[in-house]
Image (cartoon, rainbow, N blue to C red; front, side, top):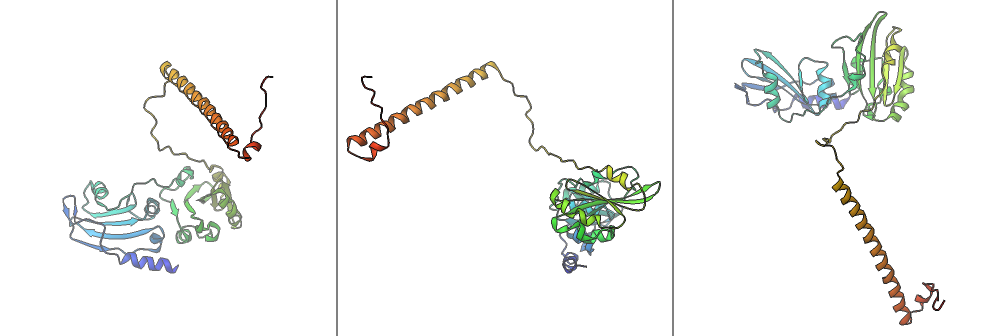
Length: 299
């Protein structure tokens, strides 16, 4: 286990109670204590974990630095994901516990979750078999056949895998997302060296199918990268209409601009000519060579 993960786990497990409030709805907190963190959760970005007792029920919250980490953790342990939190409740839990927790947890974020699961085919997918991979610990736990050197998490690579049931046997399918297609192209030969796997690259994605089933190629065929463009600006409520009066104003504006440009050119020419004429009158020799004069008088 990397030393940094060990130190981080110790730090998280010794953190002070800073998550659950004194009052949760009508329930008063009786006690709170930190929760030990596993290396896998620390790798997912766990910042703090706390268990609290509210008398009728006991709650646990794991807070992550972002929604992606909480999403990864929610796939491998019990609990409900609320933004960048994963929360659980035991005992006589109130029905509106998720709403109470969502309104009470500090620093909660509801950013978008990862979309790699959309590339996993649904046919034959075993329920609750999905796992999100953010580092070598999660990779070794869930897909030991794939070496971390092939994934190269230093690039910021993320992956999601799932298990499938096929007529000819079980399969595991993993999809890794790289920040750039060039990074995926660079790592592709490392995946192709893994014995007994089928590999496909599509844009910044590398899909890996592991298992003895001949359906590996069929699963890979369904994975094709599609870029997504998000629109953040609200479209206008009314479409733009070109009315006769607006068209007339546009023509007048064009004519006004043309007149201003002509006036500017005329004044600039007069200013340059007047300056040179004054320079010659006062005997500046440089003025004679800078202008060619055509003596057309009387022609």
